[in-house]
Image (cartoon, rainbow, N blue to C red):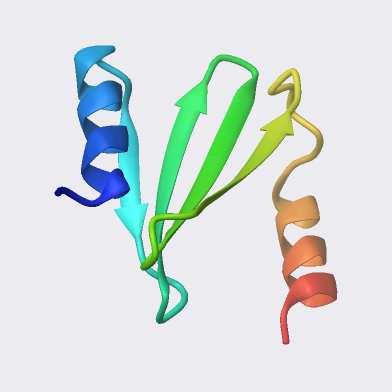
Length: 77
């Protein structure tokens, strides 16, 4: 039996959706998918469970270079 991660990737490929894979935890693979107006993060756990987070917005520009450095200063370490 194949892991649910493969089924998810097959569905994304069938629909020709762009995604990226990354690993930030020892027990999950993060599948990041971008749709118009929404970014989706799917954490696929080693036991096959999936946690899905959706981030919605209109993708408008919220600031410029100074905002980038402000966010880094406020959110870093």
